[in-house]
Image (cartoon, rainbow, N blue to C red; front, side):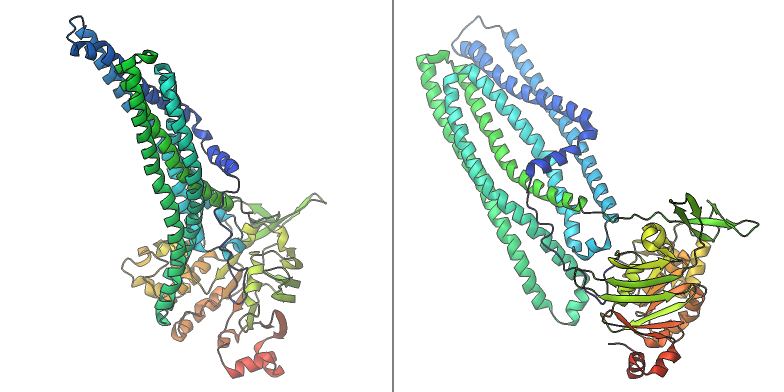
Length: 639
């Protein structure tokens, strides 16, 4: 979680720029997702070859029908075998029918493979995203990340289900047709080769231009998505400050960048097909005239049937080349999108060298802690000592110590300096100070959202770097100022604190947090569905559910980061007793702007510019008449 009072690393909108720096490597990595479907791909390849063969051979039979049957019939020949003529026509129909069937099956196979690959890729992205450090989410907009799951995966879907099969089919078709044309007339094939050279030149020029702009379009699209996502969330703020016109102006700027890139990309992409088509038509006309002359003169054994077949091949020859040119842009877009996806997958995961774990324990007859599998309500740290070959089980109590801690979100920009702080188990520690003093940063470090470059933090006497992050965070409960509720029932959102909690425990937690009152008035009570981050609840009600979630987790250490900031004074009084019951016997870190809420803290720590300037209880600090005295007597709310 990003610190509320300190600036985390600046948003890096260029970090996911879709430049295909290494297309070959990216393409190879895409193909690696197809390995589990090797047999299906082989089957699809066989069907594709059969389809191409059916198309080419069916056309070749046209020359036989014309020369051996249709021309003789038109010239009044009586020696034509009608049964053979009917057999050839039926054979052509069967060949084309087989081609149609295998083409349909091929498409179904590719759709299945593509869907499974997209599923696997999204699973990989989401799974990897869960293991990324908080720093990553502090430096990337939500819109950029969503673009990986939507726009970029969509370009890959188009590549695998449409572009690649079409290109492979087109290449096979071009090769097969070229061979057949060489058999029919090597001389006329020369015209086709000249046309092919011209087409490849056009594809190279226009394809390079459109590919560059398609890459820019993908980048601009992610920026627009990020902007829209951010301003949908902040729409109330926009309206409160009447900034609609300014936001529209800013949106027009990023939208214009997208428009410019998309326009240029599509201009080059869309003029390619007409140019290729006209070249193909020109070649068809030249080939038809030359072939007719050859047929009339009998040059090169050219017949009318061969000429008709050759002209049909020449038309078919231009179409796959045009398709290859058209799909080139899709491939470039897909490679750019794939690089963005792989950039996410290649992000360094949150490292964890911890080896101390949290385990359930029981007390034996001698008072020793013994590890067990069932939940007992008693926890201990399983601490292996490799050098001694022993394992100890210190009881989880919740004592936290900061020893000379210095920290900054960015290198050479520290926000905490030489922090020495000790919280005994069961103590309530209040962190107060102006915005930017470093309060939330301290709680971020307790959770190991960020690791320390200098100093140590000890938890029950154990360096937290030795404790596995999952186990460390399982022992901590947090109630944040910014609440987040998930789509699901009220019961499910409270149970998020501990997934094995019973319905009775959930309801007891809600009663303790004083959330049961408003929950019982909801349409379906605890089974009321919440969506849109609990938009059908007030901010205070959402905060109460967040507190209930922490209650059901039953942790020994609590972090309350402005936990009651969104609750009115009356509601705050109502939950004060429940909160006191919740905090009883636990180590609690309270961040509060409302100083009246921290008067009963065992220790109040006053922070200023990342340093501790005062420590003590309320009466001690008031008697010193220092910074806390000024804050408390000047106003109950910190500016």
